[in-house]
Image (cartoon, rainbow, N blue to C red; front, side):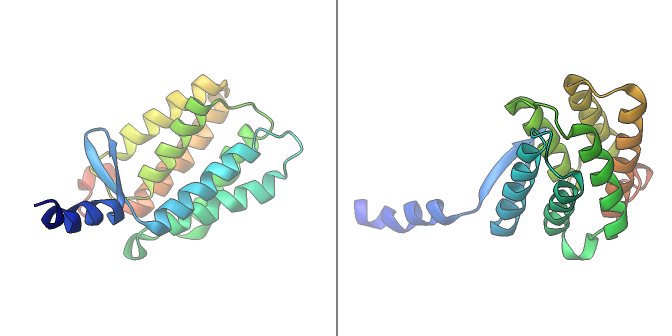
Length: 163
């Protein structure tokens, strides 16, 4: 009996991880895991005030582009504009683990076609930026560019994510 269960146990060990976000499962394959690791490294690098904003921004762009599904890949300049605004405001700030996680989750989710609306994701990002201490005017710029990324990936919210 124990031998009959072994294939199922082994299969569960090699199945890609599933993260629960807002009651919705998002599969993380190896490419996603690598891109998320790159995003984590970039966000961690932002804690250093001497970090090159341009270099970290490029790391964020690379990670985001890998996360996008091929048929829904946004234009690189759209992603770069968001990454530039985000990293410009975050470089040198000491983000705690919860703040980094909140920003990363928003970025990961906006690059996937989930049922979460662009507005909902933008609201979550805005809340994360507020907790970090970003000014209202800067938050507005970052969130505006974030919504443009979401619309490039999944279409505007009024289309019901049917792209």
